[in-house]
Length: 553
Ligand code: NOJ
Ligand code: CA
Image 1 (tube, protein in one colour):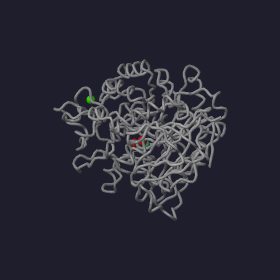
Image 2 (cartoon, rainbow, N blue to C red):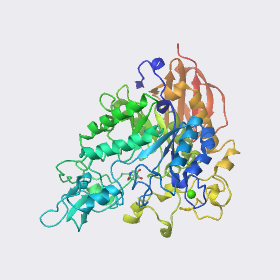
Image 3 (tube, protein in one colour):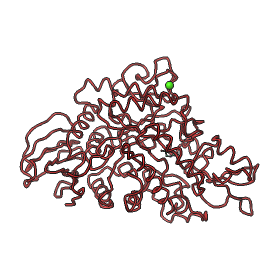
């Protein structure tokens, strides 16, 4: 039995980002207010009451900056503006003010690794070798034979280097060639990007989700990546040629920790007014390495995002091993977090099925750590099929047919059963197709169904909010349960809750006589609240329960 505790839990102040739940809004797909078929800021404002009813604490909004939209906002052409597709700064200010009025925090997507190739900085930089901003990006001479300076590959296929015929050098792009990488080794770049942080914090935002957070520091000698002797053919995502290398030199150079310590200091000055948070997008599955981004003195990111649950094989023993590995890797001050889906990954309902998605939701909302909930998962939205003529995602366009496209998980939010699912007016054409099941799977219909996925998510969020053991407590896994079950206890002070999850479709019998009696507070089936003798706990297929235990002595 592994036990992990906060130091003196009673004494710890409950910071919003520790005990709260983050909801990710993909703005193009959430709610279109002006009827052009693309979600916008006024659409988000119109749905703030829904989000507070649902019971989340913060929204992370994927990028809304001016952008040519090659990568739908991750190609930024102005870090301190709002793209007219989404609204303007005044609307953004209203969004922040109204969110704060109802107790919702706002987290911005911060994109430090690259800009759009239309960003004025890059236009200047590429204009000549003598331009003062030349060194703001990574420009390198070709090899003697004219080929790129090293073997680095872009994540979306091909070389990571693009030749500029005018100035006769290559520039680096970790992703699309229209997204050149900034040179964070240039102090002027760092200062300009820290100014961007100041700009948004001065406007009242509560946190940053740092995009591609591991990418900003590469090997200063630009060494070739070595070949990958054992590409993981069982990996849930196969990235083609990119998997043929070990990515030792094109990201995550040790100097990155200095940058994040400095960024943290900047955040800490703002946190004196109100606590701010820095989340980092990290695709790292070596948990020791991942945990380094918290900082050895807990002085870097508040939470490097944890994608462990996303690619995992959905088995009780595997999920338990993951949770324990994550817990074991954390220094006492470091606060865990879990992501179940996002705009880059197939939706959880598609990965594990609708029944197990209910287990997934209970798991996400009861593990120790901050959950990130992707819009639409609360109603069990699926990935959609995207006919070739509708493909939007640059990754799919670059590497067609490999199953890497992300449009399927970005389909418009399903609000009701009216045409276009209440996402945009019936006469508008949504930017991506609406899922075929929207008449059944939508917020309005599920609001009226007390057994729906939405009812489950809503109830779980309500229970979590009212229960310090779930929001802030320690985590202890329980041994001696059937192999298809994952059972753990959360405890804060004397308050204890047992979570028992059945990862299979068949009935399971759990015997925990030493635990005595308890009370089932909620089942994923939403049909029982009852006293229970833990000597004999029956879980039906795909059932999970939160059980109140008597206070510890
Ligand atoms: C990670 C983001 O989540 C993804 O959507 C984007 O395409 C890349 N970073 C590049 O910014
Ligand atoms: Ca719109």
